[in-house]
Image (tube, rainbow, N blue to C red; front, side):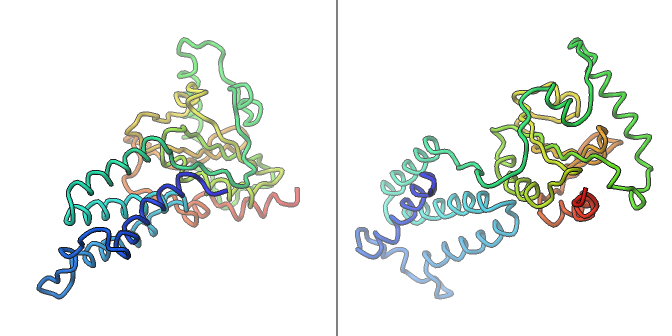
Amino acid sequence: MISLYYILNFLLISIYPISRIFRLLNFFILDVPDELGTTRENSIFYTIMAFAVIKYLRSYSTIQFLSSLFFTIKIALITSYLFVDTKISILYGGACLVIFVLCSEPKFNGKTKIQDIEEIKEFEEVVGVKFRDNEDGDIIEELNERFNKKQKGKEKNKKIQNYKMTEMIFAEFYVDWADTCNYTKEIWANFSCKYTTKGLKFISINLAKIPRLAECYRINTSAMSRQLPTVILFEDGEEAQRFPPIDEKTNKIPKVLKYGKKELQSYFDLEKRYLATRDL
């Protein structure tokens, strides 16, 4: 079933060509050519096409691309109406704002094999870790122990690592209010459907429900965070890799990051992990 979000945005965008075809407004000013022979209307829509291509190349998923495309087109139409009639432009902008407030972007609801984790005890059982029960700072102490252990074991040669002998869990840490988490959900869901085996599993954790895990695994959940979502690969209960990666010296993440399907497949070596565990 098509989301109400898409229907309303499509209707908003359709208003312009309908008013153009039936001459409901005076669009004469948009038809006046400039020195290069290009009309204002053409200039605006050439700009839309350029932005659409850029957004497509940078989008993580179909949901993100469509949302960005709708936004770009509506801004262009508000600008076009501004040349024709200021009042119409304000009314159209107001309608766009109302729909934005009342109708949220759709969330991914396709096929997935990701297991949702609701409690910290469930996380411990699935991943194979054990946290201290004391909530007065001991979880930070355990964090430091785990982090140091991970650093010491980082020199292990991955080329000779036997994936068949390793229990691997991909854990996606997210929050509902972060757009990037919504946009990348489709990527992780597709990965789970394609690569899940007995030795390779996918889980997701809402950090708003289990905030202690955000502290434990050093995930910044603030509004300005570039760590959402964070995907951590656990091997036999220990963190082996994460995306976005963190610079060990500065404790910061790289400025240039892309949640691209091919990049993530290569980064986590998913094909080899799948081939090594599919017959278990």
